[in-house]
Amino acid sequence: MANDVRAVEWTGEGLRLIDQTRLPGRLAHLEIRDVEGLVDAIQRLAVRGAPAIGVAGAFGVAIAMMQGAREGWDQAALAAAVDRVRHARPTAVNLAAGVDRMIPFMAKGVEAVIAEAQALLDEDVRGNRAIGAFGADWLLERAGDRALRVITHCNAGALATAGWGTAFGIVRELHVRHRLDVVYADETRPLLQGARLTAWELSRLDIPHFVQADGAAASTILRGLVDVAIIGADRIAANGDTANKVGSVGLALACADAGIPFVVAAPWSTIDLATPSGADIPIEERAADEILSWGDVQTAPAGSRAFNPAFDVTPARLVSALVTETGVMEISTGETPGQR
Ligand code: MRU
Image (cartoon, rainbow, N blue to C red; front, top):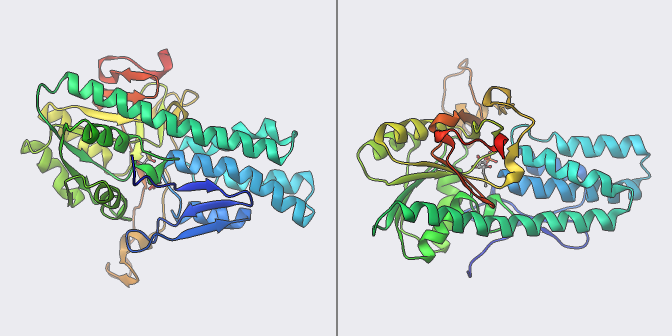
């Protein structure tokens, strides 16, 4: 489909990232040549979304090797730099997995690492296409003749991946099949990934949508305005518990009450079989000013403290289906990734 965007690209000399902090106002790019720049881009969400930071982390190993060669690092300095990339954000397992996948290739040289990172990127795009098709098939088998009304949270689109999108990939596939009515995109406080990024992607594709306050989501579901919630994931435990952007679990609870499906879409690279349950998933806590300020203006009184977890965990019992590139698992009926 036209209009696709590439959040992460290798130029031959380094990484080219869409600076997602500038969207939707400007489509600007960052050229990343060193580890400091990459860690900063990941931490301030210039590049974000689990699969996208996984691919950026994989190329980050090549960046560390190239910087190390320029600056005469020893093995210990290189290992420390790779470790900094690996730990730039804690919740999305794709980041650590992307870095770890490159480690065996380091001995073969930087070109081998770049080739493997490019393979990861290409796999992610292919996987997203498959997720879109499997997810749309699963939903339409249950939808009768209706065009679906979908609620989303955060951004799990082309911007959050190597291209196309996971949860958003299903939305796109429904649209391509003329079976999408409308999307309710949660704005996604505090950093507005829904209002800024998902709405930008929806607009580029001419997909009818509303942006709504996160606080509207439960009521939108209980009023019968949507048929399904579709979200992405940052880490899925072996038992199916799913970490995603904070606010996701509220959608899941409302969907359970309303009796509509709550669908998680993610590649296998987001499933962490070494993590038994959601209680073991590390949840990133971010800076207080994201909550206590609006732009540069402080909105909360001096002295108020912020609680700012970036993610929450939806228990497996609330996840109707997990759509991966290999098919659909009906998690709430007892299927788990760990059984596969
Ligand atoms: O903090 P962010 O913007 O990186 O959070 C991203 C999300 O929660 C996405 O829903 C998730 O990574 C899936 S992206 C395909």
